[in-house]
Length: 271
Image 1 (cartoon, rainbow, N blue to C red):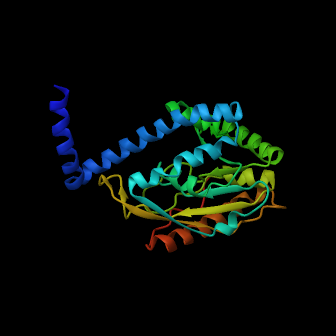
Image 2: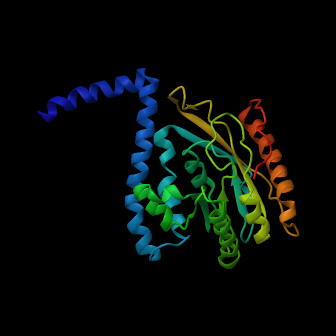
Image 3: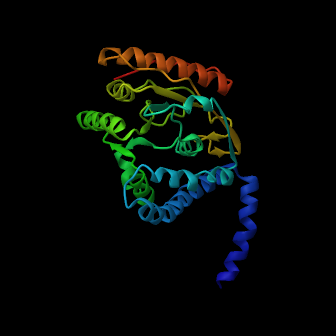
């Protein structure tokens, strides 16, 4: 009886993938989530055996495990500015944030001893949350500003003590409106407190292959542009707003350049 149902599914599935963009959208989305959870199941025991528990060195394992996922989704990356990541010691990476697909771009260029700052809710995302914890990801509660500030302050101390790098999405949330959202100040407080440089990385717009509202998810190429580092030595908390605005302007210009489109500004920064 099971075989009777399998044959129609095998016949209909290719037809739907060929004719229905909506079906392709949901198929790719479900596959992406399910496959990432499966990879996490495999990576969890490897990380525990390799490092004994939570350790930023586990990001090497995660990076290796995730890098091939792009091929299943029909995505490719073009990266420029690799030389700007050849910076010794700790630094803060900032990048724009469009969707969960950003993880694939992150793993494409993630330097050694680099983790990221993520919303606390991700910690409860099953096996993915577990592998994120093992990789040393810093979780913040976005609903409690005081808690988030304490976490960022501790992160700055850890960066210097353990000589690690942190990846931050200064927009604070996913933005699929074709531009950059105003930047939150946390990443810039972090960099200034630690007195470490900021390395901006810009993802080109996904609008030529991924449209959530229109339910389209086609094959496509994502351009990643790694920009020159921005020094923070000698800066104080009074310089946070200026640093944020400077970073926003540089990244917005790069976004327009690599996306090949004109995007209306959403403003430089916010608290």
